[in-house]
Image (cartoon, rainbow, N blue to C red; front, side, top):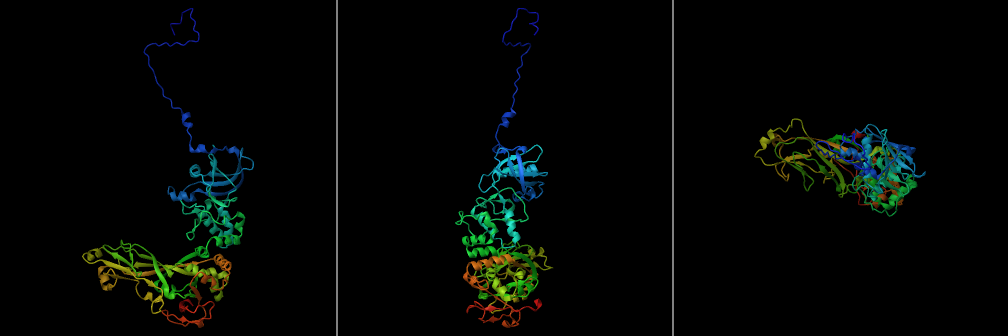
Length: 555
């Protein structure tokens, strides 16, 4: 300020002045304050951020591998490649009361932060009594994030079921929790839950979905398809103390579910195995009910309904570009046009009686009587199996390449049809269906109704394929726990398991064991014997017993 220099008698008191020298330039600077942006609330602000030093761990509950998360796998964003683990502990938080406990879920591994955020968004998006409620989080500076849930002394469901699993009894408790899931309507958006993600709230006995904790009992659980569940169970819920008492759990189920429904639930607890056979082998096995694994002696046959036993195709594959049509008599027809797709044909068959698919229940309701009459000890029961379904496969034979010549040859010819014949268990003249192995299960025709079969020479000249037949049998077995569960049903109704009373009360057809060589003759495979012996317990006068001959190859 050169103009002030050298001046005298000048005083400036609490005043402002502006000196502009030269040209005046005004500069406007716009500042966006980060502080204002930080003041905007996010979902994280809805929950407390707990300092690491305020968390005191009291005990570890378990761990879980994030790569096994059901929902994450189903999302297909990443398939089992998450490097992160959860460690679930019980903790106290300073300032929340000395008796208040929380569920502390710590994340570790390369993808820990990613899985932590994913779980946070999942549990913060819902506030429901059936879901573990989020309290806060801890994202400390050392990169070990954690979520904190209200604890409520939650018990992992898989820990409870593991006790029942180790007892090797029937899983009535598992059935109870299936029922409970339906009553709580927890599966309206999902068909099932992983056992690892369900927890029991001990005070009310209800279920909650929460962070996954692993156990050696693995699997899924959802409401059983065989029973409808009221949203307000009339008997209330079982207490946690009752879980270890099989009799209490069974009594609850038998009171709230019908006997037939509970029997169906038990029947679904089977183990299965498959065996591929030729048509000749399969047709000789299929009419018989019970087999001992690795010992092909037929020992049981149904009584009282052999004439009405049906073998029905319940599913068939697409072939040659056609979905296939099921005709009134059970024949399946495929219309062939253009180049034939020579992939194999697959058809699924099940045994029916009066339209019912309940052979598993019929067997279980009478198994004690059959095993008792045959002198089979309990420890061997699980070695015996039944078959209620099979798969028929038609495979093009070698040399049937279905080349393009078929398309050229067929131009101008009428439509061609492949017919898969229906399978009858017992024919009208009384012969066992083993004779099916002597003739093809299919034929070709130009007639859409299948009244006129195409000759073999015509088929060959048109380049249409011939097939070989393979049968895949599914054997079903039950462990001793399932049979013991059925025994409890007998006794709960006042029936002797060694009789047919329980089966008759449910309207089931009766099983008649085979084993006394004096009661049947040694006949050809295509023959049967009608036994008129009425000495068997509970045998009705209008029943007939069919005894297939024990095959020499199985003796």
